[in-house]
Length: 506
Image (cartoon, rainbow, N blue to C red; front, top):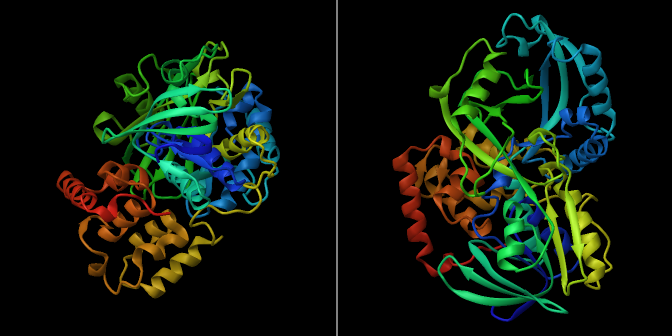
């Protein structure tokens, strides 16, 4: 790659960088994505896993943001039905927190702001007549139900990079930008790989999508003066053994005005989150705190009959949202809308990306490339909102894929077949191939993870470590014990010692 020249270099392999790379590559621009760690290794894999408008943002009068997110929800449901699917949410009513008329009004707006097409509308329910009432305390007698969508967040990032790569983009993970020099007509970027190798690449334009490190990139890597100020807002989640047996999720109002979700997770668990607090440390120095654990447990215990405590937590994770400081006092009130700043006066094109929501990443990417493309002499029109599925999403009804997989590979257990279809969609055939038995899928690491899937993730999805596979490409880390995880790590060490594993295929 030494002396390679691109139209665009994107710094950051989170959802914003991946989305911009996909959009730009699809318009014919040559693109390089540079990510210091794994794809989606920070904020983009630490979300509440929702594609939603943000019901609570209506109270902050963020009508434009909610409408934009809800319209994107429709597009994404169609683009990736194997990793994004509808989910119904239960909102128990407590009249001392919000009156019923206010909730009904908010849900009416939520139903209509984004041009809802495929999801069911909202309505009131009585818990005595509804399965969602069973795990709740008896004091809750009625509530509301509405629709949003669930997403496998880290996989959404990976699929955008896969699509970008299929359109000619180069994706470099575990590669750090050490210096970025801005010239009149272009940028010269010095890169260092995890193995310590350095190289220089050039680009006519540069996108700073470094997320929590965006300001640091400007100051320490590009050595540019700026006026931007980021606030890092931490959100933490806990996972416990499942607290209910139905498929509904809950949205719980809290006395401090915030809301906390309780969501069915990976079949046997419940995901509870999120907190919303200021983070003063380094973006890489982040973990759930004792007070956050207490807050989330108390939030659930206000509603569920079965109490939980710190000892019930089987996993937790935390992430930080890098939000452009708008001088709001409360962390929960800072706008989640994105900001894009195009700069051309200082030399070569620079575009800085701040904030945003997982739900609106595609619109952010489209807006970004709409601004960048003319500066790079590209007149191609936006395309990602017009029926172009992400890899694996070519079949609109994944249930058909499940039935087909069961017919062609009846030896695959139902749970495993379901997980693979709702991770890989049509790409599942790339993994199972013409296998006639589970033994044909290679070494078994535990749960339903076999070498065939591991090899696929390494060859096509830039996976390199056990953590990449167990916590981002999947959530099988919840099911594999330490010895199984070590066997996987050893397998990967042996695998990447072979020359054929040097570079992922696309």
